[in-house]
Amino acid sequence: MLKRLLVVLMLALVSGVAYGVDSPTDPFEGYWKTKDGNFILKIEKNSTAIYSGRVVWLKNPNFPKGDRDEGKVQTDRNNPDPNLRNRGVLGLQIVGDLKLDNRKLRRGWVYDSWHGKKYYGSARVKNENLLKLRGSLDKFGVLGYTMKAYRVPREEYGRYGLK
Image (cartoon, rainbow, N blue to C red; front, side, top):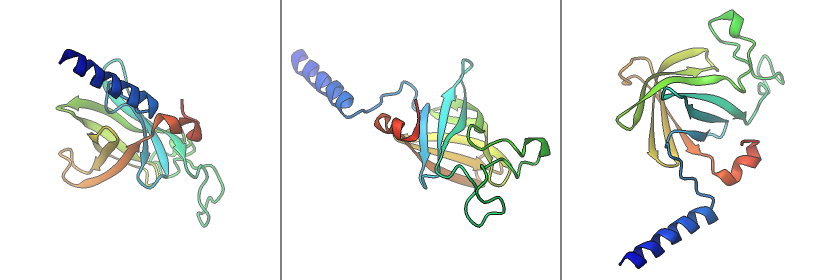
């Protein structure tokens, strides 16, 4: 019986390595690509167990055709603080102060740089490869929008310049 269990465990380990499956110790940390493929967010946990996330890749780093700033690097131009409007979207922190609470991240914020708005934030991992990030008008999460993001497989890191 023990021998059979060891064989099964070894096969699982070898198949995971062979197919590049990540087994993160923390299901929230890592690179997450939005469902529409427009950007990749890197979520990290700091030493005080607070989660944050930054934009690390943009499908279109410049404003799109037809935009008033067409061709220019995307900036946080709609930020309510005029002093912050020139900062680039690439590298911008758009998730912050999230705390783990019963397998869900809560009591943080999510920032929408396209509209310059900050919302109450929460997140949950539906499975190891699907993150649901929610921005809400109310702190209970009733009135809001949920964005789906999918874990970027390690074998695709090079494609996006990730490490």
